[in-house]
Image (cartoon, rainbow, N blue to C red; front, side, top):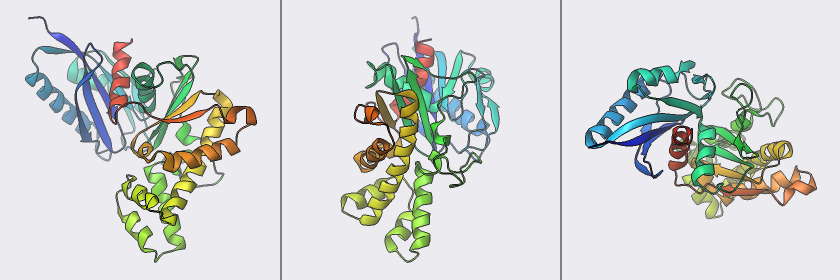
Length: 316
């Protein structure tokens, strides 16, 4: 019996990595999330991926691997490298070479936010858009930019690093080593920094003590915001203000039809995006303000990265 081909899409994040298999009908037929463990060597993650992939094919002997697409922080489409990802301790890794040793098939890589943008373009709400920007909100902040129907890589493969645009001179120290980057204000780590600053101003506030001790995934803040907690509102208002400033810079330069938000904190939806929209409009020239939409991803959580990464092979 002739085996059917499948493509492996891998979405590497600062906290978790999601991988899945995409069939010829461009459906995700299996997916799994595993911890990234970015403080350990990348070989630890690749060994666990290899084990999971081997188990999948043991259970699905009618399938064969046609190729692997990877979305990763600082993944470079041109060089095949993951280059000094700011929230991971791997340094420079030739991920194409490492994956070829393990799997012996075609492998392509791009930035994780670029992969999410490809997912939205081929499978999501951006199917009929030519100019849009996907913003990934998680441990850090990434962006994938489509302009005139094409994904922008720039001359060296690093176009679209919105998370490291400076929005405050001399501001917070970012994991990249610079100060005042958008990511240091708008991300899980950025919101945690905001909570810590609020706590320094009001060290006996029980809500701030509790929320600072929680894993920052938006859930507790969302509940507090929805119940009318004014501190939660101020945290999201400040985060949205900084996000809007970054969006205004990008919109002025690129004139997108929409910003599409994907990742853990995109679930906060209007709680952040309402403030971001107001801030963006305040910082835009009038002709831009009302025609740029802020939209949540149209793909299921965890699927945009897989589909986008797989599309590097499927739409080669």
